[in-house]
Length: 115
Length: 110
Image 1 (cartoon, chains in turn purple, brown):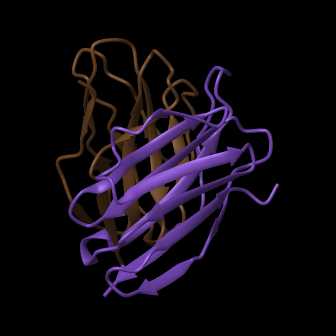
Image 2 (spheres, rainbow over the protein chains, first blue to last red; image 1 turned 180 degrees about the vertical axis):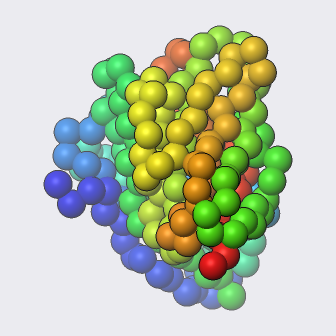
């Protein structure tokens, strides 16, 4: 398996523009996570899906952020409108929940810069 | 509340010196504890999990429930160990999500 695949790897956009980050989890995994990494706050969980259903979105910063998982092999994280403080690395991760000792696997991240 | 604390943002040691990266947690039940490593501009990779009680790349970590700690140790640091290390916790309810500490950057000098 190619692992968790994220796109784009790098994005530079202007303030106010819409940003869409994409994620393909590992085939067969039933849980998907979006994390944000910044120097100030480290790794923060934004939202967590299980079987395509959002289970915990308490980490989503505000209404400008939205996430969807229309099927088991695809998820998006959208920021509209984007702001400079959204600049961060956004990681998608997936796991097979329900098994004892399941491991969460991370993608390579999407590096977002909002200018 | 679930919380993971890594008190050191940066740990700098010389090659061959022992390393201990500290991790303390707060959780009322029986958590699973993990160490993830992130090499420069790469994805996070699982290094260790407490239930496996294994040694990976010479690193070990023991869960101390009395002290609520899960410190990462290596007797002799190598330059290739330089990376960011994150301690993470998953609650016993097994909701799946990991709560991460702030991370510690390990710098191994030649």
